[in-house]
Length: 149
Image (tube, rainbow, N blue to C red; front, side):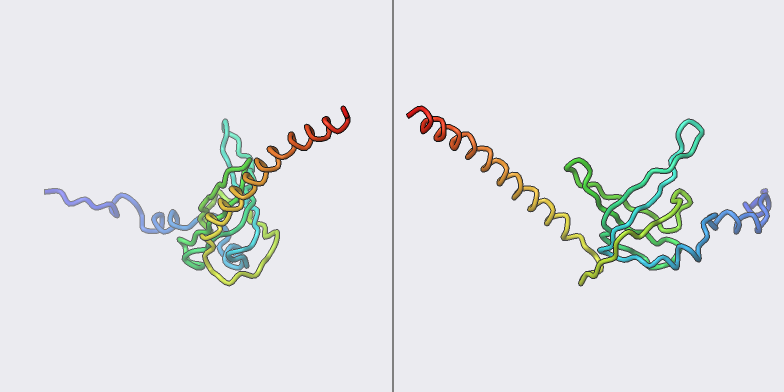
């Protein structure tokens, strides 16, 4: 019988080095944003061997797990009429920087109700657009008949 463990092949110091991210953790810990704030996250994207930055700007719906290593935050934005949500790890090396654009005061720590609220507002707008579109041709017809007389 041959007893070979993982630690015989890899030095213990190498294991601990791989667990930490290259992100400066103190900078990310000190970021002061919470649910309700508007934030722009610069995400690193690898395309054809080159990295480029892409911004994702939106409302912070929630922030989970505080400042520990598995901390995440959820951002929601509306892109061309469709709501888009992304969950970002706070200490991800793929995030270049996080900018707080606007701070706001909320009474909740999780703003998940905004999903349904946004849908209701969109439906209300669609109703008003369709009602106004139906009214306009009738008004034009009435004006034309007055001019003919």
